[in-house]
Length: 463
Image (cartoon, rainbow, N blue to C red; front, side):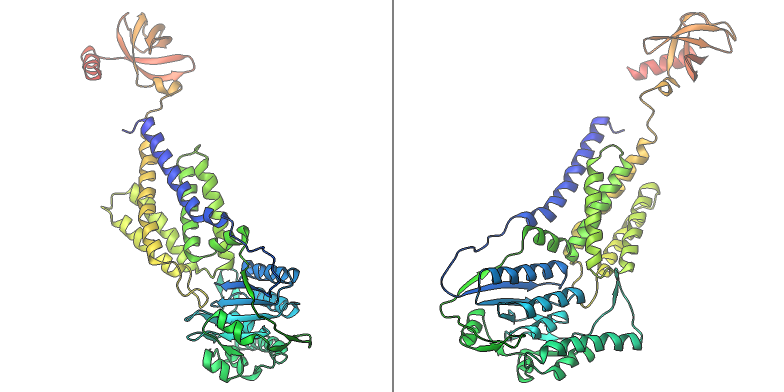
């Protein structure tokens, strides 16, 4: 049987394990990034990075970067892009700020293998200068209707309505940018995608450049027409390139909306709350688990979560608990592990996040979680069999010695645990007789005689 010290050690180790995983996941986001705040008389090109899903966090970052460029009187804002697309509202917000920016904006899909898909395609076409690196692609901008955590099917009328609104929005700025709106619309209506050469030949982008330096050399001295109609010449001789970094808050939020981070938060939250419920009073696991679960719910609002994946993970937790209660020879444990691994596969799967939760993270998280859950539940079940160590209930079953004879049906005195108690018995008990407590009635004990041989045997065993 586990001692209280052993149980305390187990709880402490578990607490450190949960806290360590949470720190590894979240703390790096708070490390402040270096920022270039130096002043220079040479033309300033401020670089922003639009990497990952277009979401409110990145939209806020782009907005702040454009505002910073305006306050520093930059010559150009260069947005390097590699995105699968994202939320329509965030895309619209970014495009509005690009169109309203007093500083010319160039959007560059890079490096090789990058894409400006879906929402990224419209952002690319909204820029004063649109460029792509060799080996990149853009397009596939057909809208997908999302409702909370799940993608929703669209009937024909709704699909036409959404597509017509998207194509009208595309035309509203691509025509003023002197691009080819008719071809660009096919990315919405037919989900077409274009290589960099197809986009250049179709007059949807202005340049193909192998690097940022090459692009900046190509556009130096180029006259561009701003969305307002004003014409501006890009003077980039001896430019200074400075990067605008995500703030600590944006890094933190960007980190937790990644599929791997979402899964880790779900597991940490579940393990923390489960530990608190099965071992009440530890407090810290409940606090850590509650915070992790709230962060996971925030991430689930932005990521396309599949309900099937959630159900499989819940089923896995139920199987782990049953494994602790029933004798299944490991069948329930294996079933729970398989269920959770399948849950990670189904958890996040959409055109925006084709990778979903990585297999390495899924396996490395599922196996420890499975064994910890079973271990904790077995501790709980074992603790229910432990005898109460405090209170009057502790006396039941204990043996004592009669100090004052007890008549049948009458009262006397006994000594138990070094304490004197009033006692009653259904038979006459002489002084020095060994008795066992059967029931506690207030401050009076009901006792029965213990045969001398049984008492002696027990005494020898205890020695």
